[in-house]
Structure formats: structure tokens, C-alpha cells
Length: 439
Image 1: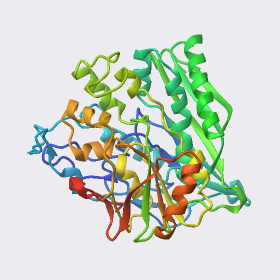
Image 2: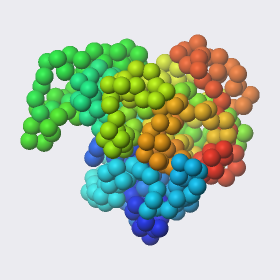
Image 3: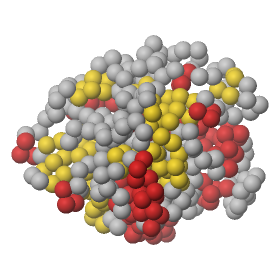
């Protein structure tokens, strides 16, 4: 995504950058690459113009292999004052922690990715498939003959450092699957296969066995085959372990990709809860844990069990639930609430407003983290999933039926969280939050 002030620093805030506030990667029609530790923004082949900035992405595709405009737009919400613990507005200097302050320098990533796009621009011959024109979406898609293939890649990010500290690897093994197959589900693709990648300083048998057990759990939940992978022992590059994968899926029996293009005013937003933080925001979380001298072996206030285990809980996998409704024409949009929080909704359509006027109370874990770092509501909702891991946009007349179907296929906890209204961007009215949409 691209958003923020095109003029750079303003009121002491961080400079504008390219990239969802957490995971998501730069994508070309025939290539999808990861960069940095939780960085990037998916865009299509083309030429970047203007100056990129943080959290939002705007673009207009002129033709299937033509140039890409990235329109940079000021997000008024991004520059809203943060709130102090007593509810009073604070200045940028006295505000609490943000994702940028935790060490994720998005402006550097912005400049680097712009160079990558300019250098890698290429239109393959038609005999090698036709890229599907869906810039900014969760997965790249290519049409080969009569079939459409969806491909996505992602990493577990700095959550692996928490796993290393706790000596627990099964959860992040499962995350390798979850962070990828959920992105496939967000375009309505049926999962087919995954390849993993492990970078490590030294292969350790016990660690790899635990990773394998987690991978196996995730693959079974997603009904996805492990087709292979890459294990690179690179002690000169990494001192611990880095985990990621690439997954691909397809659209059976002529199913069309669900891109959000058919979303209209009056549609209803259904939310499926998350299992904690999933794999997003851990650069910030780890700073808070260190600053607060949090004992990971003990429960947090109001928590059950060691807080380290609670934070490490693996990404919930939504593929079975989404597969059960993906052929229903009343399902018009799907969003994986990964890095970027509620901002992810603007990836579906920028000519409408996503009004989250029935957002459920976030689990207490999020409130504890917010208090620990004096984080503003604005920052919380654009960094974490805030208790909702996946959103389904449906026609109002079919809400009850689709909820029943989801409940039978692994999502009995689905709930109505909002609606599609006039305007653009994302709104959380109860908190006075607004995130502007694509340019």
C-alpha cells in the first residue's frame, strides 16, 4: 500500500513509505519476492511515479502490461494525534510506540522496492500465460489456457525470534502454511501446494522435527500438499532461523477470482475471529516485551498460561471455511487481515467505504499490548488484526445463509462487523478512526 504525506516528515511523524505496515510483498506478474523483515507492498509490473509513502497503495493499471501509476495520497487518519492512556490527545513527541519507532524503516524499503520494480519490469510472451489484472491483491494470478493459477509468498517474519527465545518451533512451522494459504483464500483460490524455505545458521534435528510437525498440522488444516522446499545453511547471512514459503492454488470448475470488483453499497462485512496476533507486528511486540521486562513464562494480567505461549499461538487457517462459500455469487469480497490491520480492506475496492460499526471488542491481549506501549488506537488498528483475522463481504440478502455455511465449515464464530457505505477508505466510528483509501 502507499499512503501518508507526499511531503515527507510532518509534525514529527515518520517519513512516508511503501508497504503494508507488516507482511505482504512486492509482486510482479511472473514473480513475487520478499524483502526485508516484514516489508513490502504488492503491485503489478510497471513504472512507479510520484513519491511512495506508508501503509497504503494506490495505482491505476492502464493495460495488462502497461505502466502502473502509484498515486500518493495524504492519509488524514495517519496524522491523527495519538491517544494517551487517559484518552487525551498527545503530540508526536510524547506519543507511545509505533511500528516505525520499533525499527521497521519503511522509507528505505520504499526506495529499494521502487528500484526493483523499475529494474525487473518485463512482459512475457502470451505463450507463457496472461497475468490477471488484479493489482494490489493478496496473490498474483496468471491464466494458462483455460486455467487460472494463483501464487503468493510470505514469511513468518520476526515471530521466529520469539520462537527461538522460547525454544518452541511447532507454532511457527504452522505459520509458514497459514500466512500463505490465507492469502490464496483471499482471492477465492483453492489451495493446491506449498514449498517452504528455511534459512539457518546450522540445521538442528530437534528444531527441524518440531517445524515439520507444525508444517504438517498446517498442511492438513489447509488440505495442501508440501511439494518441496529449500533449506539454506548460511551462517554468514543469518545467525538464527528465517522461515517462509510460497503457495499456489487454482480456481476449480470455472470459478472466477474474487477480487472485490463487485462490492457495492449496502453489502455486509462478516468477520471470522483470529487466534491472537497471528504473525504480524512482532518487531513492535518484541520491543514492548523487552522494554517492559515481561517474563514470558508467566501469565500477563488477565491472561491464562504463559504469555510467551499466548503470543506464539499459530495463525488461524481459513481455507476450509472460505472454500465452502467461494462459489456463491453473493460472496463479493475476501480479505485476510494480515499486516496492515483494517487497512487491508481498501485492497478490495477504493470506490466505497468500509464502515466497521459493529467491530467486536478485541481480546484482552491487544489491550494489554496497547497499554504496555502506550500505543494509539490509530496505530493498533493499522498494525494488528485486533481480533478479526478474515473478512467476507456478502450481499445483505444472503447474510444468514452464508453465516450458516461458514459455521458448518470451521467458522461457527463468524459475526457481522460492518457494512459497505458511500465514500472511500475504512472507518471505525466508535473510535473516531479513519483510514483513507487508494489514490
